Length: 291
Ligand code: HBI
Ligand code: FE
Image 1 (cartoon, rainbow, N blue to C red):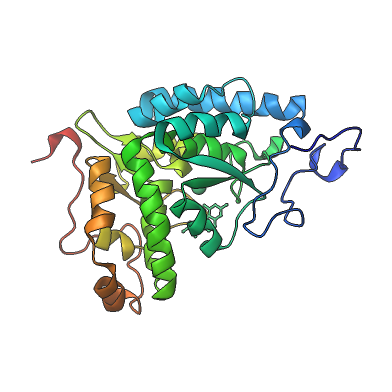
Image 2 (cartoon, helix red, strand yellow):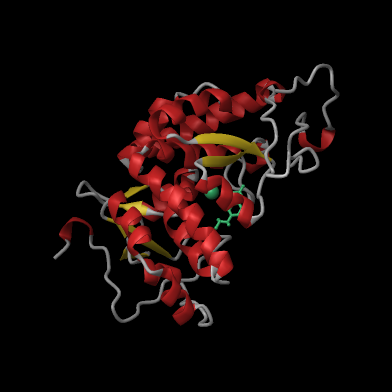
């Protein structure tokens, strides 16, 4: 770990010399977390984000998210990845590694396939509390890391890394990436106790936690991996469609059992279905009134 010593803060990002240091990254895009460089203001920003999201999550997030958050015990400030990795290793064999932000697909998949989750090391600015385009440490950590403590989800994430490398080889990454988007980022689940969120993009967003679980109009379909791979998604507004799991075993088995080769060949040249449309064979989620 590098100490900041007496380095002068840069005015462009209010004291952080952290945001997006790609120059200092290794070949696998990892960098030191540089935990010592977080300012008291950054830790305070984390505390406020953590408190707001945790209050909403108690009501709207999956129990696996809540138990993961409790185990990570990071309400008081930006967590130190070395400690986080000790907790993860003991539970599921995962670890977190610091990265400067988005990294190339093949490198990202290689980390996942080896049970390393890349977490951005910088935190959003004060004016970005509600929304930012790129993932920061709050999204990556608060959104993704709790679920890595669930053994089934942890295995799914590793399997996804392997599937990613094969999808690149088959020129079908757009299709596979929709699985990631509609599950890891924007997934909902109902294990019989009501509709809950587990996707990181939802869990780390105040607005979408409420919208995705409580809006009465938005389309919610029962999870079907092929339907997911054929569905376009929104990158700059709430989703128009969410896919609902019955269990995390369903997600892991969906990936393990599926013969991706023929599915990629059949659909990779076909434009995706716009999100929010109904098509033959779709099964709507009907909450506890399922019949
Ligand atoms: N890099 N840091 C980071 N985080 C991601 O979620 C990520 C990435 N690079 C590529 C990538 N995701 C995509 O390949 C997947 O979302 C499919
Ligand atoms: Fe994410």
